Image (cartoon, one colour):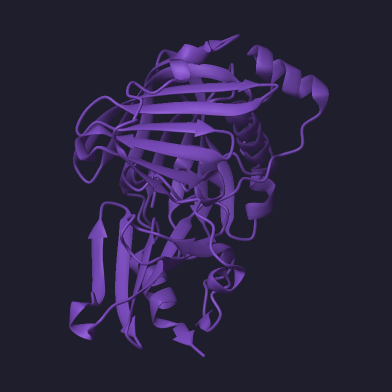
Length: 340
């Protein structure tokens, strides 16, 4: 699920791998100093800008307003990010549509949903929203993607370099990033299908890079004390978590299982097997849930914006594969799951 399943599901994510940076470069990023690099079209220079972007997104203090466009819908968001000696903290507030706030405190992600009077707590390790995933070291993605610089642009009043990420096969989508020439922060992103059509777009319309973020700016607008809390970090016995018996026989090249655990969908439900599959950028979630009769099952494909979903039924279990990838990818995975 991508960006707004950043915002709709918001509990399950992929653990980042931080790029190593020399201390001088990192200090420049933290201070927001301008980075002087020649504008070239070689893959190595594109990777250089992407890896600096990943460090800036993690290390800088910033806040701003974004718009998110998906499937004809437009949402506005407020993002506040802080990094200090105690770690990394973030607050994401939906300014339009249903009220939602997402608070990240290092590896813990808490989603406040006033409309349903509920709070969901999850782990950043199972976080798949775009701004979490692109803090990875892009140098490791060369076998799945090609990188190039497409020129310059301007977003939120800031000059930007445009970097394209093109997949080498049809099992994943491509990206186009506008990266701030001054701070190296991501200013705008497009998610594109194999024909170059934009499926999702995220863009800052206002952004400030600051020395410090006050703690009050990271507090949710509601306490959630009277809400129903759902703990996605609930611990289960080890034998419940291993996923013994379920096997994925076929994954597209470059995709790996990055997490497998039990997850309770609601406080009154039985825990389901939950799996995360990723190539480092694209994310796929697999849910395996037992039900009483197969007539309850969802079989086949459906789509919401860039997110494709494929369902199948096996031995009395509902298998649902969801991802910000083409339909053939989720279908391949769903149809290759077996129980032994």
